[in-house]
Length: 194
Image (tube, rainbow, N blue to C red; front, side, top):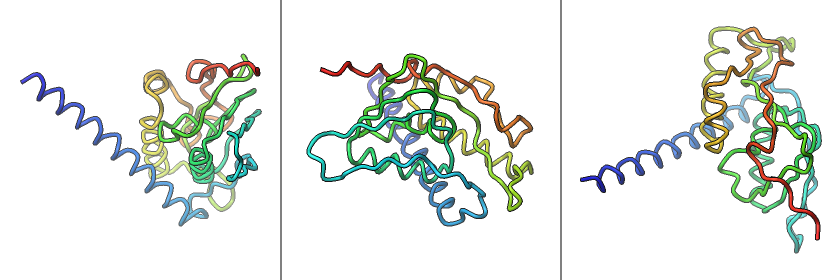
């Protein structure tokens, strides 16, 4: 009986993770199809990656303030498919923190700067006049997106962030407010060059 119960919990956990990843994919596809409606206007730091390189490539993130969630999602997915190492320096904020998503199994992230931090806030969108949307619908969508992002994080990040007061510009916080966590809490230090 105990074995059946454990198997049931494992199956349920796998189904919840699969549903979460599908939901994030649907949200990202919706954003891609309707970028003007969502209002994300900032572009991510682009890294030049050679898909034909014979050795694993190293990319440095240095004080990345984030930007368009969909662009970061697609960019990290591409980097994960190519199997890159990403060294984090300074801060990695907003959409940049999506590098922590468990689905990016091909990315080997490490902390190069002992003072590196991740800076989190709930997602928000702009209207056509570049004002932050604060409607009931915008608040609901922001909360739903944050919940989907949260379940995509590694367990240590999820456990810390789920009960934290994460700033939300949609709910009245300043868009500059962030919840800061030392990067070393979630990502190992980079190995010293040999």
